[in-house]
Image (spheres, rainbow, N blue to C red):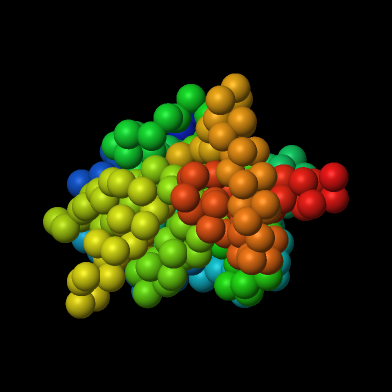
Length: 289
């Protein structure tokens, strides 16, 4: 068996390196990432064609192996075998940090279970870049990633997110972002939000306002481009007068009648800027009482 290759970090122990790559601006690659990519024996990439362009740009000729969501379970064992034979491997995805709404979890999980050394190589991240420049509270936040395409499951998650007191973040494609904003506005009310688009690229943009105003701004355009990172402010807890105002509005609307609980909850949620689920719960409680 050939002698083990030295690890890029100077250790005698081979490792799996989780390497972050640029999300748009190539200058965001780190010096450490470049050195790791040059010195490992293999780069496991989400899309070898995409990664080859990156490596070629920086004059790196390391061998590539395709590892994506459709073959990760199968290829993970092969990667671990290579590391056990003394060959360090770098894991990269198309952009940003692997395993964050990208492939890699199964490989890292297997490596940890098998006692293989896993080394993070930090760098670009759409999530952290958006939060840092967004202007919403970041002392606590929830990252949801991409929401399900099926409406029922998506609504279930949005209902849960509507109850959170802190900022939450989702990713969305440009051709679905407007419908998602409208859906959120209907369910969450007049929440403050920030949409980050084309992060680190020439046409980088931050749209700030409430969910409805951001949706209207995008609808006025011929086309929306670039992957989107949407940050939504947490729901303020209703205390004191705020809670009383909501209760008073529900009582008044029920006394006037003429609206179903669902329609009434939707209208008041939009008018008062509170989660529809909270209004609906109060409506049913008042009707039952």
